[in-house]
Length: 58
Image: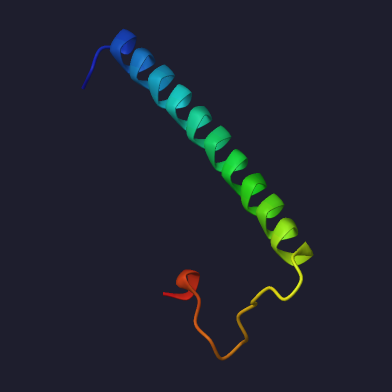
């Protein structure tokens, strides 16, 4: 088992990595939302139907 000090440092690093990844995920989700809104505003845009698979369904 690691000493308590090393465990604390590892936990702090893991927490910092987790927070950074969460911020990136939040940003990416917001970016996708905005891009979908822009795509809907484009006249004649293509939208997949229920029968057509999307990349997210794979």
